[in-house]
Each structure stands twice: as C-alpha cells, then as structure tokens.
Length: 271
Image (cartoon, rainbow, N blue to C red; front, side):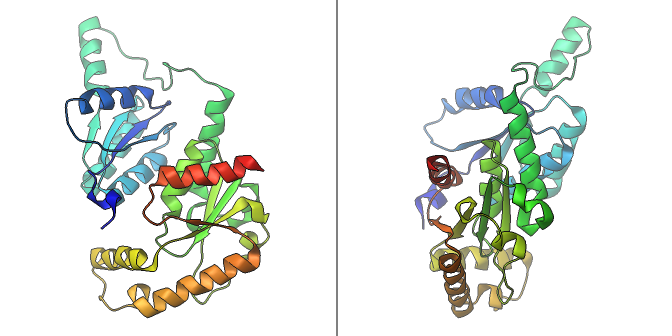
C-alpha cells in the first residue's frame, strides 16, 4: 500500500476567486489536529458545471469539500451534486454572510472575486479551466491544437485530475485516452511532441485501481479491463506508441497530482 493510500483523505477548497480565504480557514482549523492532510485548491469556479466536476473528483479521492462561493446558483449546484454523490461539503462563508446580512439589515452583493479583484492572470486561469473541462477524455478534438499541454495515457492514469490541476496554474490542458485496439486520434498525433506528456504507471498499481473501479461499477470481476495479462499488453502497446511519437513520459506511480504537475511544468518551462 502506498504512502498516499495511508494518509488521511484530502480537503478540497473550492472558490470563485483564488481560494486563499478558504485555505486560510482550513489551515487554521487543521492546526487543532495532529494530522497532516493535503489541501487542493480549485479557484475560479463560477459555473455550475465546474462545481459538479470538482465534486465528482472529490468523490473519487474521498475528499471533504470546503467552499467559498457567493453565487447562489453555483453553490447550489455544488451542494446538490455533493448530496447526490455522498460527498461531505461545508459552506465556509455562507453562514457568516447570512448573519452579517441579518445584523446589518442589508443584502450582500453576491459578487465573486471582490477580495482579490481581477487580473490578466486570473482570467487566464479561468480560460484554462474552461478549456480543460471542454477537452477532457478526448472531447472536442477539433480544437485540441490550441492546448498548451496535452496528457495521454491508458485508462485510470489520473489524466483528468492532473489536467484540472495544470489548468489551475493557467495552462490550457487537454487529455486524450489511449484505447486498446484503436489508433490514437489524428488530432493527438499531429500535436507538437513537446506539448504531449504520456502518463504511465506501475502495472500492479493500475490493476488495483481498475479492480476497485470494476467493483464500484458492479461489473463482472473478470473483464478485459481488469485482466492482468490484458492490462500488461495494453501498457506495453501504449509505451511503444510513446517511444514512436517521441512524447515525454511521466511515471505517476505513487505520486500526488501536485508532484506530477510540478514535474511536467518544469519540462514545459524549460523549453
């Protein structure tokens, strides 16, 4: 079992701004516990679809969601999705704003981003997050060429969470799966190889992840998707494609998304 699997589940801080406020509150509360856990920020969440996507990722990694969303529609979408998926979620500012409104006899402005204002960097990150959502799992290949970074790999190699993390850093990131028995799409093959990062993982770790996925879906336990021999052949084929295309390979085994993103960004920023 990996160190990551033994550590407490993470905490997601979801915000319509930078996430500084929610992160500060979380750190202050965590100081009361002799436990180390990871905080992941999701800033610039101003659309219900983005809020739902974050909750789906929280369900995958068993995270607690803390949010500072002043737009009622986005907050409601997040809470509804959390309720449906059984993800614990807590509104950091909602109760305080309601009490202040009652005390001051005034309505709040309900305007996102007032604390930090707007900047070119902020809007760049918003655009990158929207791009990552639109280009997740091989979607919208006709505009993939606009990506700063493209991730590829076999199923369950953390392409989506890593794409979202890189987008939070302002990089337009798409991800395209390598599917057994199907040639990679032309849009991926035509990308500048320096922009493509191929994700690989230890086969035994991937087998464990896929078996858990199959159990979660209630599918028959013996499927090609989670068959050890088929999985090894799938990884071999993928690695052969990586070599032939000259893509940069990132082994994600036992590493958190933050660490893998940092490795990718070092290579991107070195060019």
